[in-house]
Length: 149
Image 1 (tube, rainbow, N blue to C red):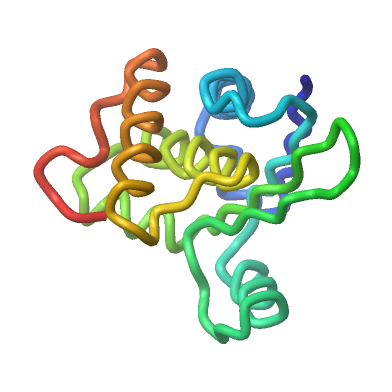
Image 2: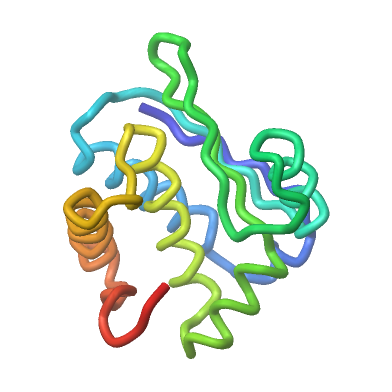
């Protein structure tokens, strides 16, 4: 298992140590998710890039915080992309550090690569429980406690 980190948006670089934390979060999510092993890539981009991806692949012409693109290749789970502006704004609104919120988005995205979903109540509870478990191991507070995401 490996994690490739691509930093397209320079503002991400201001968060010292974030790259190592992202790699650890992704590897823990792969291990805890248990629905497949393999490499992943994480793209740290800006809102314009995520807006283009969201429009092109989901038909939604707006930026979003995180997107996951599962792979059909053996040994490669897929790609996760995160938007700086959207993630930073969410972190501020939720009174979290950008680093902690980004780790949540990475874990969330990697679990999607393994087939987890949050559209139905039971599925959402399973996915949220895994997120909380992985984030606790990383020293990040439960992102689902006390507010809706």
